[in-house]
Image 1: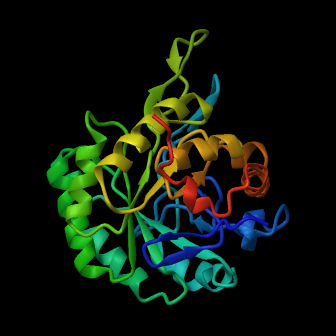
Image 2: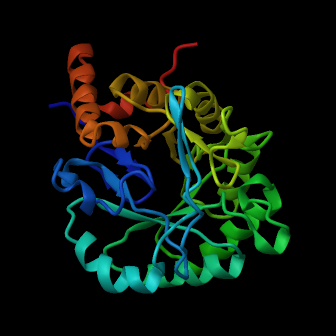
Length: 303
């Protein structure tokens, strides 16, 4: 077996394959399909300070080589999570990372303080694609000053590994990455979904209740890969790449572009155990190429 170990700040991952938030539930839903402990880590469903019902249906739509979603962070809030789900997900022998969301800096701070007290969680993924209700709904992650502010305030409240998840719906994602790095982010993960929409010609109406939603899947991979490469050139902290990864070859592209680890999202809906096949494929590649450690491949793009 090849050495697939990588490090994201203080997190020592047995392999670089992590599941993306919102595509793997809280891990428990996949226990019947695979050994979750085989993964480098899992990122749990997005969690907010208070319960959220999510958006009205329909809130998912299939698109060519991808899917749109507008679920709207449906969850029962951090109190319910701590009482009912935390004892269950604590059983996993892999890194469990919670994706935290807020509609104000104050909510991010309060939620991060609560998660900081949970011993079994070594990291949070700070989703800065949320709309800031105090700034007219603009997402934190689309503005350098707002991205920097929320990262700075959460860094003061949270003392473990801080991963900031970046929105791709910006002009220069490298600037945003540098801004959060300067304010204490230990890692960045990218990309989140692209803004898109779908229309039903028969009804002449948008398919999603929210009109627009987040596009994910193979259709976004070339753009996501480009953004990961750009960010890896711009920051010194580890980069976690995602966006349309469906197989080991896709994962290797992101690693060669500079990603230390990868997250697999939409593919989980198609094949629940796809992450294990990706790990097997990485092993096979390293053995076939005679490469001892996967770390040798990080950023090893030949120009």
